[in-house]
Amino acid sequence: MAFFGIRKPAPAPVRETRQPPRHIAVTMDGNGRWAKKRGLPRSAGHAAGAETFRTIATYCKDIGVQYFTVYAFSTENWKRPQEEVDALMDLFRKYLREAAETMAARGVAVRVLGDLSPLPEDIRELIRETGRIADTLGEDAATASLCINYGGRDEIKNAVRRIAERVQAGELDPQEIDEGTVAGALYTAHLPDPDLIIRPSGEIRLSNFLLWQSAYAEYYFTPVLWPDFTTKDMDAAIDDYHRRSRRFGGV
Ligand code: IPE
Ligand code: IPE
Ligand code: MG
Image 1 (cartoon, helix red, strand yellow):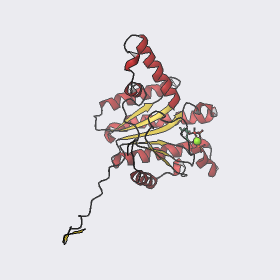
Image 2 (cartoon, rainbow, N blue to C red):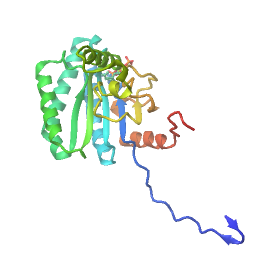
Image 3 (cartoon, protein in one colour):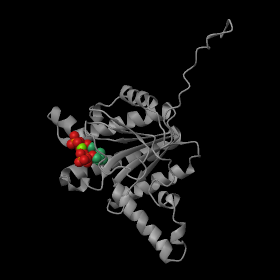
């Protein structure tokens, strides 16, 4: 800008300083359609989707995303054929075992969120084991959260129940209940709210994912089926996120 004949020097080229979103969440959808397109059983789509989870979780950690959360099995997914549910449980076994073996070396704390009570006992034991290992990793470790038998409404219902029990026990005055009390009673008590929520597969709905936590999340919908989702798709979602203006109700 010229001002009284003095020309302001051109600004130095800025280095890429944009921070990635602190917390990215993904609804891993489209596995069944991916398999159908190839004439494969739905279980093959879930196996491919699980590989994508591994790739994208690693990528998120590498680019500095502190928290990565995925929706793997909803409270409604029990309605599926037993064969499909069994195949999904087998995948949870496989990936939880792998997580237990590798998470310390990779510096990623793997945690499972949801109502774990109806899961097979061996899976619950694997979840407890990964939780124990995650507890030994420092504050700086990236966190990958796997939502299994997770439902946003179920989570809020359980939180209400826990808060009511504290009131009944005389530990909590109802007048003291604030948003922090509710947030602290959710499965995600230890996580910041998601900044970016991605839903692949072309569906434009929440399907009961992170209902409370998504109040000010930025959503990104893409037709790509989850098993086809690549690090380039993640880059595109993050680029889109950086073009948003987050106002949180302000101006
Ligand atoms: C997501 O893929 C995985 C789970 C819900 C467990 P889907 O199995 O829902 O795949 P589509 O939606 O049928 O393609
Ligand atoms: C959401 O996908 C749940 C998971 C991806 C784990 P669904 O496939 O179950 O959701 P709807 O039925 O299309 O809403
Ligand atoms: Mg689906």
